[in-house]
Image 1 (cartoon, rainbow, N blue to C red):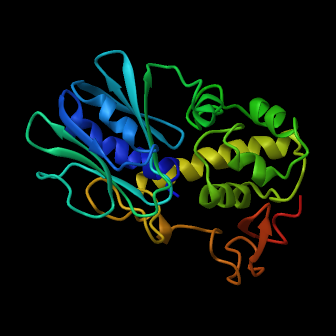
Image 2 (cartoon, rainbow, N blue to C red):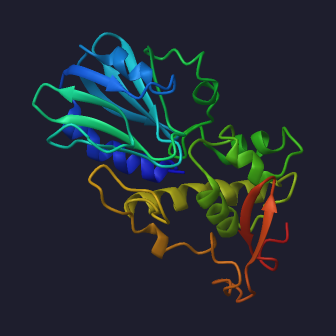
Length: 266
């Protein structure tokens, strides 16, 4: 599933292509997850923003077109309407181009809501701070992670302590901070390390255009490069770059997790 760096890469590519453009027609797959796309017909796109893993297209009528890419969603701006069997929604723009949403596995979602009204999208409404937000402090993370007895990795994936981390970047941040993914509480020094690690892995991945392991493609159809810089995720059996102990893999609350048994004892 695209995580914050992948979605941010797409946002940065889309914004200059669609900002200021009006939607002159819209169509969608008949699934209720995609039919809200039609509601954007007639509006002008003012800008493309991102919140966590969501793309938010501000419309000029005080609404937002919200797109969640799911596991395999891809947004692009071709010169012609999409003709793939995996097109789930598309919007014709007033310059003759199209904003097209392809989604092979149909786990993506589209909504149109009044600006800032996320009451019907609780996963968006309840997001924690962005890694880049001033509110994302070591103190915040320490408090947030110690509110629950759930495993730390599971809490990170909930999006409430911090927005945008999925399986890849949670593994990377926990490894970098030397924090055990299965721990159920965290000390203040470890929370400070983890906060800095979250910021570092996200910023690095954005600069590398995101991580392409299988499905992710950016708005231009290209792949990310961050997969060549992963230090923990997916490297089970390989030596830890820090201590040379073979990394291990385990399932943490139904999510495959890679970790170092020497570096991440606590």
